[in-house]
Length: 139
Image 1 (cartoon, rainbow, N blue to C red):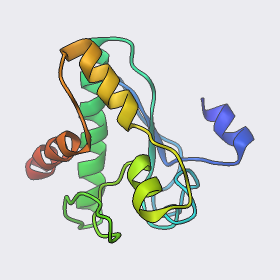
Image 2 (cartoon, rainbow, N blue to C red; image 1 turned 90 degrees about the vertical axis):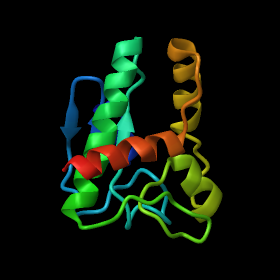
Image 3 (cartoon, rainbow, N blue to C red; image 1 turned 180 degrees about the vertical axis):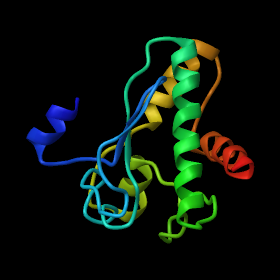
C-alpha cells in the first residue's frame, strides 16, 4: 500500500489497521492525500480494509485514539467538520462536499458497509467523533 502511494505522488501521515498505527510522515508537515483545499491543514491517515468483526472494531479504536492524541497534542477541540470549513475532524467525503478539490468519498462506504456486515448496524463520522471524544477525555 505504501508503495502505491509513492508511485501516485500522494501520501498520508499514517496508516491504521487493527494492530498498528504506522506513522510514515511527521504531522508537522503537510500530507498530500485529501486534495489541495485540505492538504495544508489536516493530519491525514489511511484505513486498511479489515476482514473481521474484531479487526474492524480494533481499527476504529486505533483511529479514534490517534485522532484524539493528535488533537490533544495540538491543543485542538473535538469538533465535526462543517460546511463553512470549521471543525477538526473531517472525512475525505466531507472534504469533497464542503471544501472541494477532490471527489473521494472514503471512509463513508467502508464504515457503513463493514459495520452493517459485522454488527448489523450503521456507523458514520458522528459515531467516530463520539469515540474520539471518549479517548480525548481519557488523555
